[in-house]
Amino acid sequence: MKQPPKPNVRLPAKDMAQVRAITAPANTHPNSKALLLSGSNAAAAAEAIARELGRDLFRVDLAAVVSQHIGETRKNIDRLFAEAEASGATLLIDEADALFGKRSEVKDAHDRYANIEVSYLLQRMEAYQHLVLLVSKPTFTVPKDLRRRLTIYHFPPAD
Image 1 (cartoon, rainbow, N blue to C red):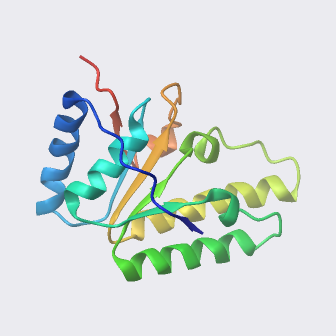
Image 2: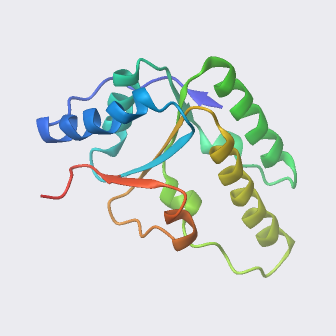
């Protein structure tokens, strides 16, 4: 479920300044947080945030979590969060745009369960005691129901 860390990528000074600004309040307020990092340097920024916080980065392999069998995805999500919680790691969910894009119209039972599973993942993220980082493409339009649950940062930041 978790992937080995990727090699460190150097971020431009402007991006590192934003990483430090993000991590400064996180050090003083260790409550549950979910951040959406968007842009070409978002994955590298996620790694830098974990490093700045002195936390392991628990990279989620979505292919290993999502299952075609009803009920299995929920069990996989539970295992994932239990492992991450036990280690106190920062959780990284890459390709958030694919996972949290516009929810599908319910046409059959599979669509209904897919929407329920995304909702369940959001609930688990909110209950998680450590930082959750979501990484997306720069062009991702964040759905309204997700915007209220996340703090959004762009890498590179806008001028």
